[in-house]
Length: 73
Image (cartoon, helix red, strand yellow):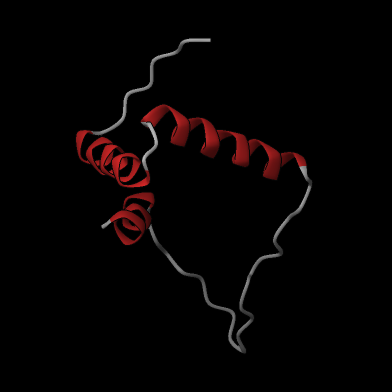
């Protein structure tokens, strides 16, 4: 099935570069990632939160934009 997905330019350039370095295609990488994500979500494996338990009960306040910045620079 054919679909359209809007990917930010900078992210797409990184994806295309990764595909070229691996001798793959952007399509192969995206299909592989989606497939793995769906398999993981169907396995029912859940991660308990919080991952690291501390002595004090504190909350980390972080936005989605800050998470993206940490993960993708």
